[in-house]
Image (cartoon, rainbow, N blue to C red):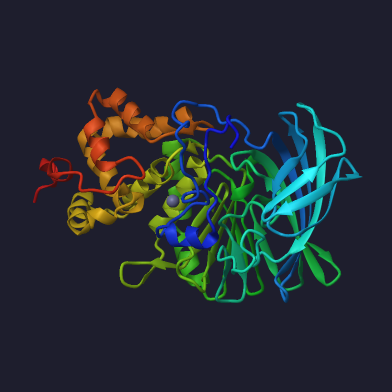
Length: 465
Ligand SMILES: [Zn+2]
């Protein structure tokens, strides 16, 4: 492992990811663990030795065979002397060129090892062109198993939102690298394709149609979603600030999807009042009925994938508007480079309650009492305790200090590696209170066994019946 590496990313299979996520997930919620060096080093360095400025990707999708024929051009700049470049690619490569010249390459499972004719020097700009073909259902890391992240919809479509880097196109092996992404997909007439970013008008190409999307603002390759269906309907609207929104509804999901989508404008204005203006130049939201109810809701930068149900305690539950509020918050908060799951999920989970309080007249004291009585403390995670912990925290420090810490969060931490302890220090500054005992009880270090935070923390005076 490279000595400069500060964030250790554990690559999990889609099956593990899907099993490990709660009802609500993000593209990176479950695939990251923090290594021992992370606390000491605040700057994330390139782990691949290069930075990709832009991806230019052309996909040709064959629905009958579920196969992709792909060509990708990576415009990259070399950061360290390199004898070779490692890319993540989960489909078999057919040819590789560097600056127009054929390069030798080999694949070790999902890693494509590309060898240039001569050693590459730091600062050198190169264009790497890769042609590849295969099925997103069969990845090179796990060729014997179905890729569960390639999720089937009940209406015959497919959607890929988790662990996408390397499945759709060759990507930087450094997950944290951010790049512009331009993608186009050619599908047969009658099929709809969706992905992240500003969409161009689809262009007819014989008995096919070509869709195009532009993401000029640099994003992680792993945030790119891709979906295809032949029974989907689309509609366009705008957020209150004018940002274009593209909705996609699966067959049979349109009525429920439109009901969920009614909350979007109100939620976007409210979240902008907390986090600042919306950060992207587009938003895409899909509402699809997945065959497997365990497929989580996933936000990737400027794109949200909503399933219509999620696994509950005993049976599946319908997805509700507050979950869209949660996912929408990720479109702001993914700008923070999370060092732990608390950073990823605590604020979005709390906002589900805060939104219900503000817009649906929910009584959070009653909700708090009811929920903490039911929690099985040995099996908690950020999804089960994020809302109650944050509400108890708000009551402890007062609304004023709490709101100021929430508003400070993004300006202070966007584009920086951040641990959840930073929220404690911000709240301590605004409230003048020592919050170490509260955080130790309610937000125990990841990897330690969840435990009951204690009566003093769970049942303060305001919570007692
Ligand atoms: Zn989430």
